[in-house]
Length: 517
Image 1 (cartoon, rainbow, N blue to C red):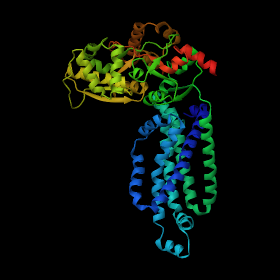
Image 2 (cartoon, helix red, strand yellow; image 1 turned 90 degrees about the vertical axis):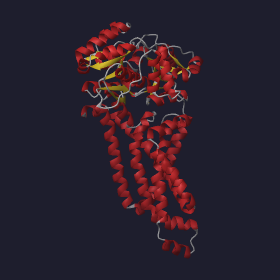
Image 3 (tube, rainbow, N blue to C red; image 1 turned 180 degrees about the vertical axis):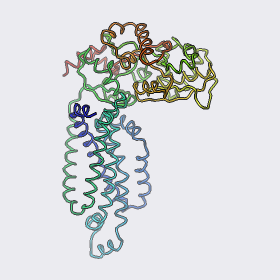
Image 4 (spheres, helix red, strand yellow; image 1 turned 45 degrees about the vertical axis):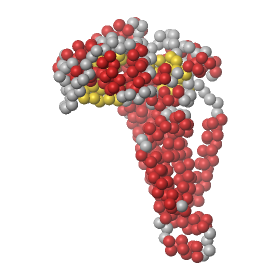
């Protein structure tokens, strides 16, 4: 752990500064507007209930959902992140400002007015000074909350310490998770301590704080002026796992000399970002239904970098020995699903918003397979899945098949955050079977020598045979027959942009990037 921190100290420092900058800018905006709204509500008390209710609603929206709502309006990066953090910070600031001013002793206000103070003088010389400790307590609370929430902003390419955390979750790398979590926790503790000390001496420090607040406002203004007038660059949006796995971006850069600026983001948000034109190229899967729905095009892998990724069930040895009928059950859909059929099923879930369970049921019935039996009770077998549409659909198929062609009851643990998490869950017995891909197993799980992969990569049957044999030998895992479709990795662009730039292959993309660099 210590070696990892030392080796990555520059990146940790950079992410910490990004994290602090995003949080601070959001707090500057939230403090200015929140105090202003709180003051306004004390002068228009009939509006206080509805306004505080509306502000409170922002706190109830899941942070990831709020970030997703931001993308169509503001794109990806720091802008939607700051807006989301601003909305989360509003409630404690507005409420404390409103409460602090309202709780000023009425006799003091009456005395001030009796001395001839105007409403503005009453506010600035009496109410705000007396309410400042309460207002500052709200600002302190909002700041600490936002330090934690800001980690999620990494999912929309805003940077910050969330990058290490989500990268570590995807790759099941505890060192990475801790490298993001510890600085975030220390930031929260540090600022809680500092703001607590300031709160105790708030009346003496109010003028220096106002000067610092003004400086930060100016810095924010110049930052966004530069941000919006800067030169746009050709950008790729990729999930953490693709960026760091052997058969992902790292090897792709070497094979194609691909000099591409990248941003890490969650898979679902990544597709939304390219649809809205916020990134120019993303990683995807050849059977993804959003390719046609979003009018995207797959760039030709003209150097045959990506291996075949044929989907198949992978089963724990102890489970298969206990229930040997599983292989025959899964073979009922062996080689039965085409690329086009899988793409259509993905489309139905992603775009038509039909549940994976209904889509799986309809497909199995179209192949003449039974789906009427659904059991409840203590599960005999646990089916897992990764956190993307296709894996959900295949997991539902596995459940239908097992319960309709055996006496077994199936439980589900769906949506594991990455390949390694599924693999470890299978190894630990937390799940018994899940849908996996031959190319993923070859590069990410088995990791053979380069000469071995070079000898296998162009032949899907050889890849499957190698993966099948080595999975059994190394981990006591067994593979059912491939389901028929090849869901290979792909680089995707918007069709109109690819045509405009004459980019049809990954080599074309590499040459274009070299030309505009």
